[in-house]
Length: 312
View 1 (cartoon, rainbow, N blue to C red):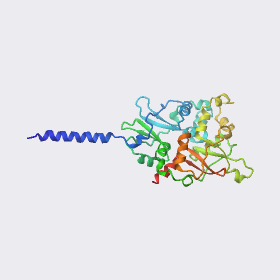
View 2 (cartoon, one colour; view 1 turned 135 degrees about the vertical axis):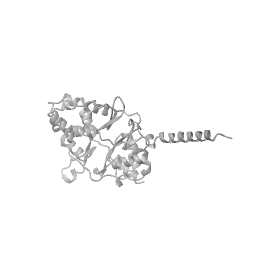
View 3 (tube, helix red, strand yellow; view 1 turned 90 degrees about the vertical axis):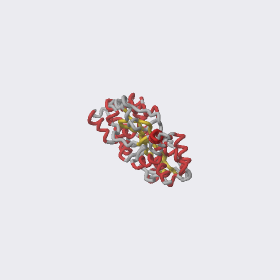
View 4 (cartoon, rainbow, N blue to C red; view 1 turned 45 degrees about the vertical axis):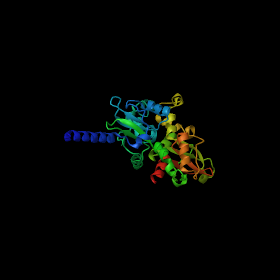
């Protein structure tokens, strides 16, 4: 007679092994996420953080504890815009450093990072992650493992490009935003930062160039992105030509026309989402103005593409 105890023991062990394999299995979000994530310590200066962003063409950087590797926060280009003059984080320059820009940019990045993080598990699916990102209006989301260590990061672009085929034949005009915030080339950098931060904009079209005001408000002259502002902050020329250490001087004296992209990439409203995604991937951009007969009629971003694929 067979020893039933040994048979049961073997069966139970197999069940545990199968359960462990299922438990350890990664979700399909990891198939499109960046695993080898560049992160920074909370002690890195804001100036050096901007430098890392520009060197790698990143719009955000996770902040981790150097010892444990646990995720502490995240800093985005919008946080730096907020700090530079657009929002509440500008108080660090104005009040703590009495408007001394050069002193304030050496403040540790932990002072402006986002601490209250929304994350997903490395076992999450692409669909689950998409829902979380859209519900919380996130441009990217850190992925953590069971030990709360950073396992990866996934961006709107990662998901948009991976699912573009789903809505590939749909056209831009069906998903573009028609309410477009814009400004003129004579606008100061400080005012531009305020417009962008207060309205959650990572890019703002620059219009004008027509005697007829109604036409000038639609003729596209250029575009200013949050990355353009960070690049300006990081530029050696900025520090070489500062007449003072005052942040207000930098913000008020610099005009958008000095740093905007004067020949921005644009698309027609009849372009397909599939074609648009190819442009985003090739040019490493996340949004473009939509023009018709040289006039801006909308703007479309990676987030709009996520809303498009969600419909399917």
